[in-house]
Image 1 (spheres, rainbow, N blue to C red):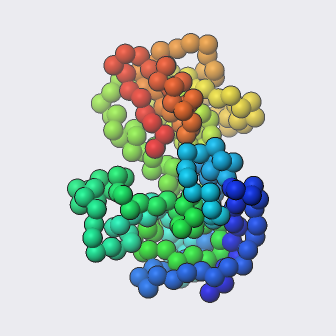
Image 2: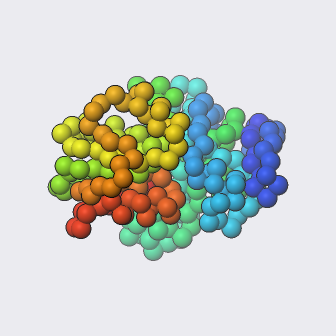
Length: 250
C-alpha cells in the first residue's frame, strides 16, 4: 500500500515528500494519521546534534493521533519494544516491568525502522495505540508530553513545593507550568527561557503574577528540566536547594 510521507535525511540535510510502500506486519493495524507534531529530539537528530548513530532517512512525528476505522481516535505510544512487537523471547527488563530499559526498544518518529506520524498511513502494533474519547485530535496530540508531566508531579506529591523553577518554556515547559500552578496555586514560580519569542508568547497567554522570568538567582524546592539539552540539565540542577527535588525531562 502506498502512503505519502515526509522523509527527513540527516546525512544530506534535506526533506522529501515521498510516496512509498507501507510495510505490513500481520499483527499490526493500519492507522490513518490526522495530527502529528515534531519535537526537539527529532529536530536535533535531523540537525546532527543528537547523540544518535542512525543517520538514515526517517519519518518524524512521535506525538501523533489517528484513526483505524475512521471513527475511533488513537494516540501513538512512541516506544516500540519487545512487548508491543509480540516477540516470543522477552528481555529481562520487560519481564521485571522495567519497559523503559528494554534492549529491544525503538522509538517511533526517531528510528529509521519505526516511522512516525508525518505520513498518511502506517501499520502500528495494536499495543502501541491508546484509545482517546471525547477529545479533539489537536488536543489529543498532547497526550504523550502531558503524561510525562503528570507522572513527574505524581512522584513528588509529598515534597515541599513553595518555590518551583521550570527551565524551558517550550510545549512541555508550558504544560509543567499549567499543571503545577493548578495543583499548587500558592507556589512561587521561577521560569527560565533564552528564546525571547517564547517568553513573549508565554506572557501573552499566562498573565498570572505568581511567576518571575529569568531571575538572576534563585533557590527552589523543586526544579524542572523542561528541555532535552545537557545545558538545561545543569541549569535546572543549579537552582534546586540541598535536599530538594530535580524533575527530569521525561
